[in-house]
Length: 508
Image 1 (tube, rainbow, N blue to C red):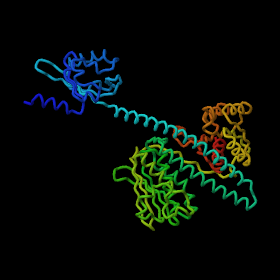
Image 2 (image 1 turned 90 degrees about the vertical axis):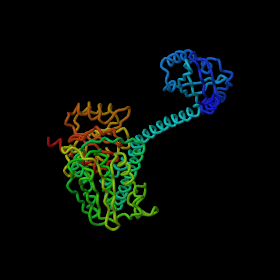
Image 3 (image 1 turned 30 degrees about the horizontal axis):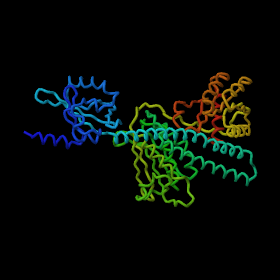
Image 4 (image 1 turned 135 degrees about the horizontal axis):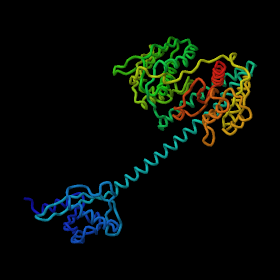
């Protein structure tokens, strides 16, 4: 049997303030820690009701809680999910946690309450909550900035690209033509860097959301072939696209972005030989997409750094470089976002292989990504076609109109849906619509296309142009009468899209 002195010593040594009350709430015992917590000496509150330690606004309701606890007394915390406060002797309130335990003393039922000051914990929780809210606001602001930057940075590049395309068509003097050609190369380089930096920023901010589904690998491979065959051929390389697995499960658009970066890198670092894209079953029963080259290879001690921004194998930081060393950094972020697995094997002088592993999809999956139609030569373009051009940026609008007019098209320009409707009301004879996706006052190019088709017919061809690379346009599907293009679109590409739409219209 423990002595009462020892029991009292145990209560006094507890880290919390201990208060023992009887069935009517009278305080029978208070440990010395009650002084540090509430400012009272134990002898000042023994004999008083426990409500003396509660703020006035809680006392009446506490009477009911105390009676309910007496009917079902068992050890538990008090006021789960509630903010509890104790009243200090000086009248101030402090947040507390209270644990209750029934005690049987002969025929009496007593209750021991352990009170703990949680002021510091509440302060930390408040600071964490405020920091989280600030981070969420900052992330939202960053997403807004990226959406704006994605549009606003691409607008002047779009203008420059189209003006360069116009100059290439009207300049005849050899030296001027060379200057225009070099200008075009610089614009392309600016576009690649801008797109890469925006891609990285969007991935870091969480602005890009995966949309996984089953897709046909063959369709994706065919898109890569069309996009990179001429690029590889210009370097004297053979692009090998080997038989694809039936289907895979992931976001086909983002997987396509991964393959583009891997293929671009492979071609860049291969001076002779070949670059190969193929698929194979993965050891885990999924699909493995492999990009292999016969290039320079990567030294083993460089492999840990190849995903760093601006890092390029064998290129000094102060020398001229092809590209910016951002492709693999984007690849790594996309792989992480999609929850996929990427491995690399490389040997100096014998090339590299990047292996992207993902789950298999349904065998009869759809194509997933619409393949870009083949370009149609300029001489095959129908003459005297009328184009409705809608863009709220005057620079882009004027540069686009200039290019189209140089090519012999008749162009009607508008800056908004209202202006487009006004032009259509005067003359509905429109062959193609070119519309920017984001217009002012919440209007979109989709609204413009719908309005134009309402006047000129549903078979009207349209090009929807956007500098927004987020998931905004994910649900807008390209078709034989709708082309979707990302800014900055090159002059030749825009003219090719217009020509394709005119040809479809002429053939139907």
